[in-house]
Image (cartoon, each protein chain N blue to C red):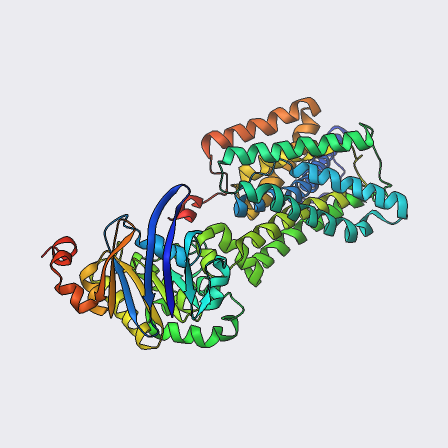
Amino acid sequence: MAGGSKPPPLNQRSNWHGVLLAMDLIFTNLVNGLMLGALYAIVSVGLTLVFGIIKVINFAHGEFLMVAMFLVFFATAYFGVHPYVTLVVVLPLIFGLGMLVQRVLIEPLQDSDEHIMIFATVGLSIAMINLMLMLFGPDIYSTPSSGLRTVVDMGPAMFLTGQLNILIAAIALVGGIHLFLTRTQLGRAIRATGQNRAAAQLMGINVSWVYMVTFGIGVSCVGLAAVLIAPLYPTSPEVGQYFVLLSFVVVVMGGLGSISGALLAAMIIGIVDAFAGFYLGANVKDLVVFGIFLLVLIFRPQGLFGGARNMSHVS
Amino acid sequence: MLKLNNVTAGYGSTTILHGISLEVNEGEIVTIVGGNGAGKSTTLRTISSLIKIADGSIEFEGEDITKIPAHKIVERGITMVPEARQLFPEMTVLENLQMGSFTKVARPHYKEKLDEVLTLFPRVAERLSQGAQSLSGGEQQMVAIARGMMACPRLMLFDEPSLGLAPIVVSQVFDVVKKIAASGTTVLIVEQNVFQTLQIADRGYVIENGEIGMSGPAQELMGNDHIRKAYLGI
C-alpha cells in the first residue's frame, strides 16, 4: 500500500473498523444462510425426487421428518447413544414406512385424479400429526445435543459444529443421489420410470417396486435430516410443518423434480432467510422469502432451473 | 409361438377387443392391419400386458401368459416397440439402449447386443452421447427399435413404426424389420401403412371394430377386393 509508516488519523481508523465489523456480519450471515440452505436442501431433495418420479406431491413429507425426529429422541433417550448413531435405526425404519405408504396409500390411487392424491397425502399428514399428539401430547422433546451445539469461531464466521455437519451431509447427499441415479442400474430404472412409465414397463422394469423404492429414498432424506437437526432443534408433533413449508417453496423455485435446482434454490432461500432475519427482523423475513417465491411463480412458473420438463411426456 | 384365444380387453368400462383370436408361428412376419381405432394397438398392448385382459387367454411358447405382469413378459422373450417411439427423453441414446437390456435375461448379453444394434444402425452409433429428445423422428424410431432388440426378444411387436415418418425413412424402417426377421426373430407388426406392410409380411389379419374380419397369406390379402378398396385405395 501507499508508503504507510504513519498511522491513519483516529476517526478514519474507526471507520475502517466499522466496515470490517459490517463485513464480519455479512460473512456470518452468509455462512449461516448456507447452513440453513443445506438443511432445506436435504429435506427438499427427497420431496422433489418423489414428485419428479412418482408425480405425487407428498404433503406428509414434514410429518415423516417429525416421526423420524421422535425416533431419534427416543433412541438417544433410551439407549444413551450419540444422536448420529441412531441413523442406523432411523433410516431403515423411515425407508420402510415410506415404502408401506407408497404401497397401501399412493399406489391404489395412482391412476385416479391428481386432486385425490393431494387429499390423500394431506390426510396422511393430518393423521400423523394427530397420532403423535395423541401419543406424546403437544410438548417439546429435546434430544441431547452431544456437543453438536459447540460454537466454532472461524475468524469472521461463527457457527455450530452441528450446522457444519448439515452442510457436509447436504453436499454428500446431493452428490450421492446424483451418482446413484446416473451410475447404477436401479438409479437409471428410477429415472426411466419417471420419464415414461409405460416404456419403463416394456423394458422389464417393475414400476410398482421402483415407486416404492423411490418413495422410500425420498422420505429417507428427511430421516437423515431428522438425525442432523434433532440435536439442534426441539422435537414436537408440529415440527415438520415448520421445516417443510419452506421446502415446498424451494422445490417449486428449483423446478419441480429437479435435484440440482432444489439444491441451488435451497441455498438461495437459506441465504435470503438469514439476511432478512438479521437485517429486517424475524417477523419480516417470511414476507421477503415468500415475496421472492411469488415473484418466481409469476415470472418463471417452471422454476428458476426447470427446463423443458413438458417434453418428458411424449405420448 | 404366440396364440390369442378369444381375447376381450379395453380401457376401463370401454371394451375395444371383442374376442380376438390369432396365431403367430416362429420365424414369421405377421401383420395386423386395420383403420384408426380398430383395436390394433390395443391388441399389442394386451399381449405385452400393459392392458389387463378381460376375457380369453394368451399363450406364448406353449405357456399361459394371460396373467403375467408387463415387466415379466419382457423376460419371457416378448418385446414391444411402442407407438410414437416412447424413448426416455432426458436420457442419452446410450442410456436408452442400456435400459433396453434391463432384464436379468438380457443383461449378460449387453455387449454383444450393443455391437449388433450399432452395426445395424450406424446413425445411432454416431448419436450415442446425445440426448434422446434431440434426435429427429426417424432417428428416434431407430433408437426405439434398437432398444427393443437389446432385450434379446424372440418375438418383437411393432406398433405403427412408420407413423409420422418421412417416406424415405418409412422404407428404411421396413427394411430393418425385414432384417430383424431374417436374423431369426419372429415379428408381429401393426400398421396403417397397409400396402408396404403386406409386402414384407408372410400372413396378415384384418381387424375391424375389435374383431378379426379376415386373415390369410399376405399376397392373398393384397389381391382381395375389399382390402384393395378399403385400405389400399385402389
